[in-house]
Image (cartoon, rainbow, N blue to C red; front, side, top):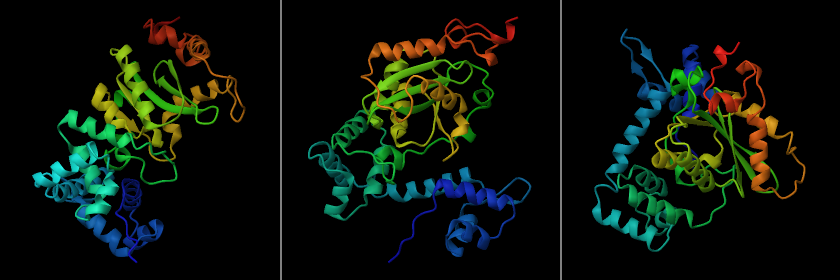
Length: 326
């Protein structure tokens, strides 16, 4: 049985790091538990020559080359077959078939190719209609699964190392870090925290499904259009609809590297403050909108040392400058 799977982006990051440290193909293959030829082919195929004539390997550039090749191949299958494309649209929007069911029934095309085609669709209304029908299937998302709905499979994530320097340096307001806090059962708090001021947007969710994150983010953006410039998430499946958030709001979204929660430390610290009111593992009383607003107000009204003892509210809403506070 052939258990081979394609090299993924996280593996390419490791390959790039080991290659920079002059590790051999054999060493990298052993580290990733891959075959020697797999690593050799990956580096030689997706590497590049820099302006000084030196051979280099970059995870970002390698992944882009891989996606470009993959897209060129896949485009010939659906985009160049009008009848097939029309049939797939009907099966999803009229008959509520999933891409897996289409692939299993007709054998001509893989479910992954269908998901990728959906992501590439330039007809936004058609794309939304297809996504809506996929969501209707009511599948529960499990963190142990590799397939969390088509966004997590096909929508390329923009990683944190591609984030503009002004976001990294906390130079402006409106660059948010997002996460969820587990409450009772499926219930969550959705937290969005401004990197510069620490200002918290707190939302209550009945569950942590990706469509709820999408809905709450769009609602928040519509009320704060001039305030939100970007969002940084971790790799939780609840953020699988990140491309639809960007589609509906034009907000650029970035992702921390896996298991690097400290890369959004402002949010992590704020979630710790929320735990003062809702300790982990405790069964809480029914959460009301007034509870949520009270916590949000309290945390946004606490003076912060890093703000020269201004509050997040004063900095984010009133635009007071901590550097000019005596």
